[in-house]
Amino acid sequence: MVSWLIVVVFVAYTALLFLISFLTGRKATDDAYYRGNRRSPWLVVAYGMVGASLSGVTFMSVPGNVLRENFYYMPLVFGFVAGYFVIAKVLLPIYYRLDLTSIYGYLERRFGMRSYKSGAAYFLISRALGATLRMFLVVSVLHHFVFQAMGVPFWVAALVFILLILGYTFQGGIRTIVWTDTLQTTFMLLSVFLSIYCIASGMGWSFSDMFREVGQSPYSSMWDTDPMSPRFWVKQFLSGMFITISMTGLDQDMMQKNLSCRSLKDAQKNMLTLSGILVVVNLLFLFLGALLALYAQSHGIEVADTDQLFPTIAIQYLSPLAGLTFIIGVLSAAYSSADGALTAVTTSFTIDILGVERRNLPEQRRKGIRYKVHFAMAFVFLLLIILFNAVKNDSVINMVYDIASYTYGPLLGLFVFGICTRWGIKDKYAPWVVILSPVLCFLIVRFCKWAFGYAFGFELLLLNGLLTFAGLFLLREKRPGTLSPGITREKIQK
Image (cartoon, rainbow, N blue to C red):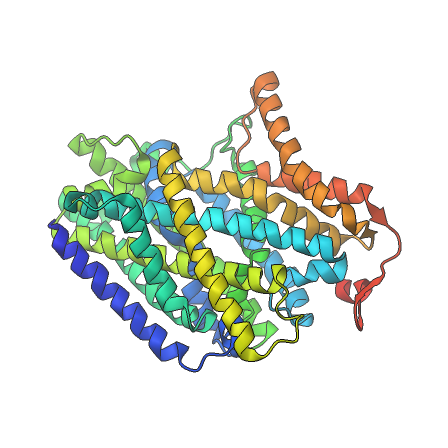
């Protein structure tokens, strides 16, 4: 496929996002940026969150990983459903009852300022690393197949991508993202269906042939029954549940979209609907991955990195339609996760770290601070993408979840302790707990590998959360206390 055609598609798709941004971002206030004025239709949010939940990592890494790990990802997805149920029935009622803009405000009201800042800081680290890993995957593909041939350095391609995201999220924030996510989800799913069609056509298979070939192949194996394996299905299911609770329910990016719904009931319908859709969509991605693996096997295609399996086949071996379909799909997935992440870290840093809502500032002054933070976070994203390009050595999806296990674990421990107990804590020591927990987790993982040959998988998150919970237990205080006028810890827990 010629590079100029990919560039045309890239420019046209981006222009469409800017049009939506212009229509939704006019006269946007701070409340529109942070919470969409609480007017977002729940069905639109649920549909758009499919793309935000999947991202470029799912679009490329999940299909590519089938080559190495079959359908072992699917028990993790079943765990996602259980996690979404907990979010809908436990976390969302708390967030709506307290009328939060940033969900980490719960930690202040429950424990105190140090816990609040610690939770917000871990989110900023988690989301910045996770989001930029996803962006890096897309930028690397575009650079490899398009910009490299033009002599464009990687950092320039990354800069262009960041500037485009910065441009269309700058004014409207979450009000814009709710609608751009809808467009991006549509194009991403359409891309998957067209990719499956192109591969089947290239193999000369009918609809029934596809299912027969995938079903008879070793790639369709779903249940790893070895307890010592990091992909043991029980560990996968439990990890999936807590990954969802942590990376969605305790994540400002994902919850900010839910908090833009008109009511708690609408937000709950959004979560439960999303969980069902994601099961089907992830199974579709794994099916696509099996087709890619079978195509690679029949054509003698080998890739050093499984993340490159999909783009290599789509762009270099299939028809131009398949290549364009892939580019549109990966752009949709990348934009969908990147724009929300940039808005969420801007919101968290502005409200949680700088405390703009606490300072009695005029609207224009608050907006000026938000603009500066938005630009600063975009610059941080750019630096991280360039860093990942220098050190990447594993499938990106595994890197994302490994990082999440260490950074979302303390958040999981903080929220579980707050919701499941009635104790307060010695708040001034909370930062030490959330710093030491990942360190201890790292040492335990290395010891278990050395002493017992046990390889931790995504259950690292559970271990990290448990260590944080134990540390908070040692800091417990029996008196609940009041941390915000009119709101006691007992009221939060009702």
